[in-house]
Length: 555
Image 1: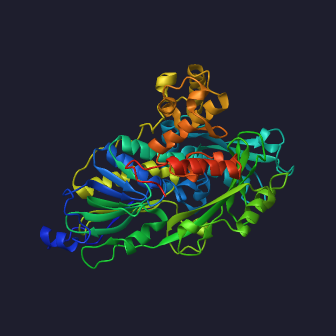
Image 2: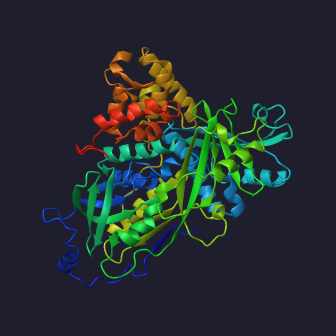
Image 3: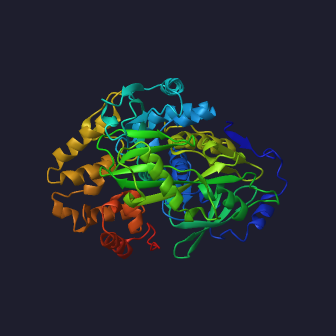
């Protein structure tokens, strides 16, 4: 797919003078504001927005990101949580997308081994689905479309002898095993934001962009916080990374210099839902199941005690992507398809948690939502002050998308600056201070295990279950969380099991957490293990103590 499409009038001469352009936007401009408060205003705090903010800030541009809710509050915390090439996309001849995603797998796995790790997938062979020769060809391509250093190749296994065969029905005798990776998607977003802030970006959560007026030299925007207070911002360029709301931003918030339409594309909003059930199998492989409708679902080990099953592909009904919820028909579908393979049926009554996300896919008039491309497109518009809109994308390719977006912003601003994120660690990902330098071909999951051992050696007083959880969540930044603590008592009272006040203070001060949901369902998945009363205790603590960096209470 072509990566960029520029406005047809990109090089058109702008005849208005600077004073005339500023007059057009006078209703949004602050008389006391600097000529430009930032170089780039990014609207949207999902994986694409935070990834772009990190990349731009690392190149030295002044960046301000605003997100109307919490970071990763919607699509970016509702994925299947995989770093993968997308094996099924080969059937749709999306070779470029698959290759790009496969190239990114090991780059990402090495950048943050605490929140991403390799995972082996088992595909039981069902002769009534795809023939074995077709699967072998697909896996051969999957193994060789991009270079691998740490991920082992695919192979055929006898499920009557392999550990992954035990939970399956006896008719599944042969299977195929291949490699991909797992990611804590919401933490990936937060760590990008943390890194962006460390490089100079300003990140504002629960801050909505309610107006953005374009002129010949920049953008004048109004940002509104959770308490209703407004802030006027002047930016040289705007990046529209609003995900499912990207088209709505162009149609209802951004105002052009002239009467031209800023929205030239339509999004197709596709809901993907997942269910979580008590652990169905005890080994550490994941499954990919072929369904009679030619779709696939995954069954993945989740949070030690659970199994994650998903996803669906259903056209979103309604105008509010934030209101997407799983339907009973989706629960039945996921349970029935999983039960085609597992010897112990998965029943709707087993479901302990569900979540749904909305994929903002470019509308290609395809009748099948699962066939719509997951590739991204960056649309630049320089008819006046630069505007870059991000369409589509998948979590595996977020770093490359951000790199391409930063390149394009630099081109539009006339200030090309070199990329830097390929090979760079995400926040907490550099474990060398704990385990020493490692070989480039070292497995990231092995490095993490050495790191956990180092944490427990340095902090022998730390409960071993808690030590592992904190190591997973924060990586090398665990030192910032623990600070001078020398005993469990130094972590403060436990607000809920395995969750102490020191961690809540850290999440409030360093990771923009404002509510119980921010902590229990995005910064962690502790909500799965807590009772409703315990979850309420965490939310009550956050409501008493939470505030934004500017001291504005969270809502």
